[in-house]
Length: 230
Image (cartoon, rainbow, N blue to C red):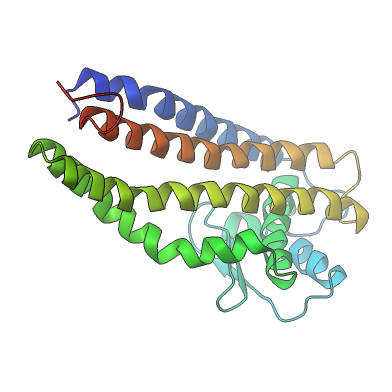
């Protein structure tokens, strides 16, 4: 499959976008991880303060191992911050931490896309691990029905990623507004947070584009889209 020029043509835009987004995130985070916030709050303290202002007291903030492994788990109401975010007083750390706190606020406010995304996790997990292989095997066996079955499973991944977009963008929007309203950072400092969060958001866009292009490739090569395969 990797030697199919058409396959490479299809995935190239998604790969380029993903690479650009990844480089942009690293650049923005590295730059603003060196800029200390005026108040000197750590990422954990900034997230805690944002939740306190939102009236949320039942979310546990914990330290998590790994590079930028920050996430919010709605199942047990745990906000996990990576070590370089939890203890750091940088604008990058504050931005990432308050973004995750934005997810906790979404949960508390019953933000519908967050609930939909959580419900899609099991299906997307199956589609990610099995859907691609079924499409690949179906193409190898020249079985349109098998490719279609795999495409349906793989579509769950795309649906999950599409639903993820408003969830992530909304969490960032909440963070950008609330960090200033709650006095966590100044209006001038928010510019750095905006750059970090905007860069991170593009990684989700890149992932969705890559998945869509992969799906279109298999549909096209199997003849399910645009006529019969060669």
